[in-house]
Image (cartoon, rainbow, N blue to C red; front, side, top):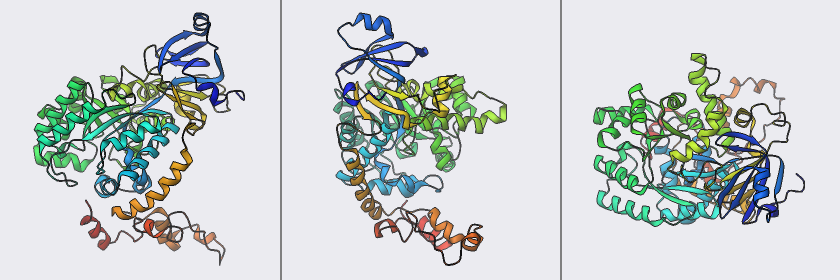
Length: 516
C-alpha cells in the first residue's frame, strides 16, 4: 500500500476495490463500491462495476477492508475538557463534574471542546455521533459548527428541561417548546447536522413537556434523547416521587415510542424490557460508561433476543469504535454470558451490526447511513488488515471486534469525503486544535468549581505511603519523578480541580454542600 496517497482519495467520484467489503450480507471478497455525490451509487462484484463504468479508473486497495463507519449513539461533545475527571468517581457525576464544567464554557471553549471530541471520534472510526444536548450557555449552533467543521455527522440534541432537577431551575414550558420547534426547523437542509431534542433525565421535565417533545420529535422524524434508568439513586428518586421507575413514568406520560432514544437503560426489570420491545423505543447501550461510572450493565443480549432496538454509545468516555465494540461484547460476557454458559454472547457480527446499522437506526438515521448499500450515505472506513494482528483471517467480524484498533484506520469518509487520513484531518490543522484545547481546558476547569469525591490516583498513591509494597523496593534517596497531574507537575488552574486532599469527613461535607 505504499503507493496509496491521500490525493488519490480526494476525488468527487471514487471507484474503490478493497480486498473485502463489509456489506449487509456480511464480508464479501472481490466487491467494489462506486461513490459519487456523497452516496454509494453502486455496490457489487468488482468485475461488473468496473465493466459498467469504463470511464472510471478503479482504485485497488489490497490489504484493506471497506466497512461502514461506527455510529456513537450517545455522546456529550462539550465535555471533552474533563474526560479524565470522571476516573474513579462514583455515579451521578453529572451533578458534580459535567454540569459545572459545561456551564464554565464560553463560545470559543465550547466550540473547541466539541471539535476536539469530534476529532477524537473520527480518529476512532466514528462517522456519526449523537450529541445528547449541552448545558453550556451557548447557542446550539456553536456545537453544530464544530461538528460540521470537523466533518462528522451529528445528531444534535437541544436540551428541553423545564423542571428543576438539582442542576437547573424551572423554565416556562411554552418557551422551551417554542425553542424546540425552532431547533427542529433550523437544520432541515443541513448535510451533516441532524436536529433532535433532549431531556437530561425524566425528572428534569414536566410530564406535559415530556409528552410534547415526544410528539414534536415523532412528527419531525427525529429522536428525543433521555438518560433513563442509569443510576440506582435516580430510580429510587422516581419511585419516591411518582411511585414508578423512570422508564415506567415515561410510559405513563406518553413519552415512550420509536422517537425515544433511551441512554444507558442499565437498571431494568423484565417488565421494562417488555415496555421497550412493545413500544419500539431505542436504547443506547454504553458499556464503557457502565464500567467507569455506572451501577449496572444493560442487558443487551436480551435486547437483541427480544427485538429491542439498540446501538452502542461512548457517553464521551473514549472515542474508539473498535474498543467500544469489544467492550460491548466483553461486558455482556462477564455480566450475563459466564453465568449462563453462553460462549457466543452475540458473536462478533452482533456487535459490528449494533455499532453501525443498529446505531444509525437508534439515532433516527437508519435510512441514511450505517450500511454499505446503494443509496446510503458514503460514511465508511478503510481498515488496513495486512498487519500481524489480522492478516491470518478466519472470522472477520470477530476479528474486527476483538483485535481491531483505530491504528489500522487508513482513511475515514463521511458523506463521500475523506475526513481523516492516518489519524489526522487532511484539510485542517488537527494538532493546532489539540494545542488550543489544552490551553483552554486549564482555564475552564479551573473556573468550573468541579467537585470530586476522590483524590487523583497519584495523590492516592502517595497517601498510601508505607503501605505501598513498591516503596520498600525504592533505593534510599531516590525520589519518584513528578507525574502528570501531581502537585509538582500541574499548573495552579489544574490544582484547583484535583481534589488533592483525602476524602475526610470535612471534605465530604464540602462536596455534599458544594456544586450539585
